[in-house]
Length: 219
Image (tube, rainbow, N blue to C red; front, side):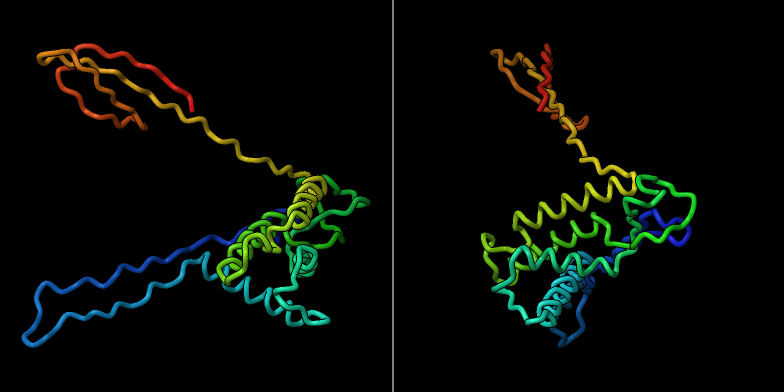
């Protein structure tokens, strides 16, 4: 999200997750006491709480829609309409084409360009709503949040904001994992071959190691 000092910088709130340890059972029990079978329910995670709030917000949007719209009749077009509605609450400066700071990653001064929802926020929101829809009984094949039109809209928002703000969005490259296989010969009464696979420097132990042939396979 935008900070107070730099209108073109996205600043996200730090994620704080509190994990509470389950109550420990007593080692000894008093006379006449019985162990308690009830346990306190675990608090929902930050992701689950946010997903529930997003889902309730979308349902309220459908209720206030004119005319009111049921979830069964909701389509990808209505989802895009909802995303555009959320732009009024955005905090990310997106420069217009005629703005002198268009494509400038660090503008030296303020401008009158509108604030919108950042592409990353919208993309994460759609992911939570897509999961909430199916958890609420919706069928995956009729999930409006997974519609092709929604994916195209998000791609257009990403590319448009990248040009306007001069900050390209690059996909993270997948790291290539190297797996090393060692063939170890052990002489007991006959020659036997065993293999040890090295994952991050941890390999299986061997005894009576007489010879090792190492091959590296790139996955």
